Length: 123
Image (tube, rainbow, N blue to C red; front, side, top):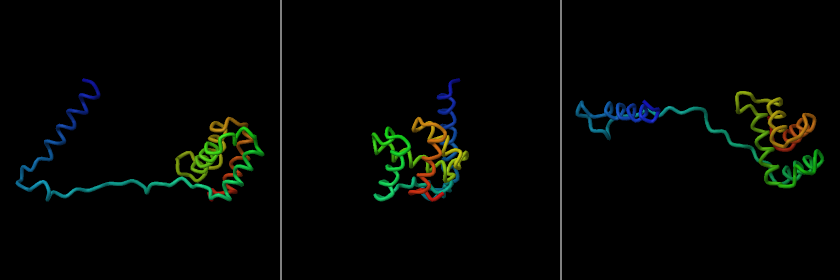
């Protein structure tokens, strides 16, 4: 059986199990919603912080600010890594991500992490 077929069978079984065999109207049957952790927002620099961030990135390598929007988006993602929102987070994860995202050396990635932390990302 394919995965799609198995899913269809499971869904049908689940729907059958939800019938009102006990005479309880469906609109009176309670439900429970299980939620995970609160959604995390990605920090954004304000105008002054963005100006400082872009200046710092330009000092690391002028190519990094060729597209300012992409530079800021990349910095915001570095901040997520630093702040620990993901399992492998921290400064090391921020450096590793910055190296891949910006195509820079480890030393340049460290400068990017320091700029992100120093401008808008309170880790």
